[in-house]
Image 1: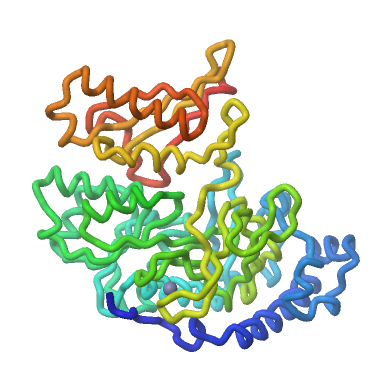
Image 2: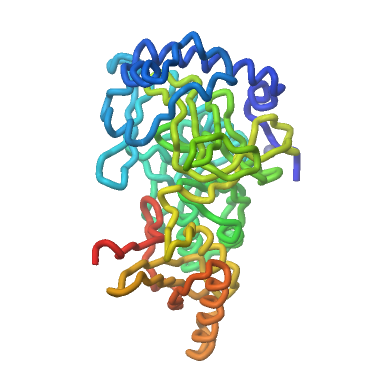
Length: 440
Ligand SMILES: [Zn+2]
């Protein structure tokens, strides 16, 4: 593996002390800006007895109160703007669980910084200027499509704005335009792989080399599946609308051990989600971000709800930026089943440990009147399903149920399905959990 191309050597290999000084200076300026221009932050800081003058360096960060998703909802749509609305060049949004959108606003400079972050991400993933980049994230209010689109153009790629869906046409473009880079959700990458195979094509017919996959938590097992189907090297991208969109962090293709955070733009902390206290490097907790340069709608100590850790030590790729561990899940996604905490990604890892199981599955939670029930539905691979008789399938499902029981101490009903039997989500995020416990 070559050492890898670094997009912005000055920013990404900056000595740590220098980076820290830059972050301190930007943090102090941010706090002055939001205190002056955003009544919400001024009131919060006043209530906590914090003045802009009291925040001079990173050491003062814990003085600042957290910002929560609810604060964004309460100030919908423009209450958190730090510039006049007329200076906002673009609006993006993410759909919340309760129907209300979370709005993000960008000035021209914000859009430019975001493109810079995504260009770094493309280089981190192994892209080279001149590559053909197929952007199969959704365009529109969702940040995935336009974020990587602008990043790809900044990077010097030939960008194909496919958006999500229409998988047959995605495959046609992969073949006809010989795309090198594919950007989409990991679950959609699998669907593209599936259609590729159905069309009688193999990885020899396409030129994919690099995958930039995110917007959903995914596992190493899923990575192996995607790489086998598409013949590329898959990396994990992280971001969220409230902070900017994709490009906050990306794995480097050299080490693939954690996602390098664009730390000159985003200040990362990991806290204990219950107490709010910072946790040591290497310990999992809730990710908190402060945007250091954003003008239109900066956030101060925003609690993301995402569970990760800051990895200790330096990376072999030459970058000095700190790395965050692959997401374990969203705090909100954590299932509490019979009092046991389980992330859907942990069930996924167990399922995909079986080579007979394809990476399409659903977890259905229900209530039978006395107790909650957990059903795990998974598809078998075509290679296995073609020869398997009922007795084999029964034995395999029992084996999986036993392993799930031993790992989580929970009884789950495992049912195995024929290839293609479970639904496919071509646009947006995959639906992994169906919770009928409260609706019944
Ligand atoms: Zn690295």
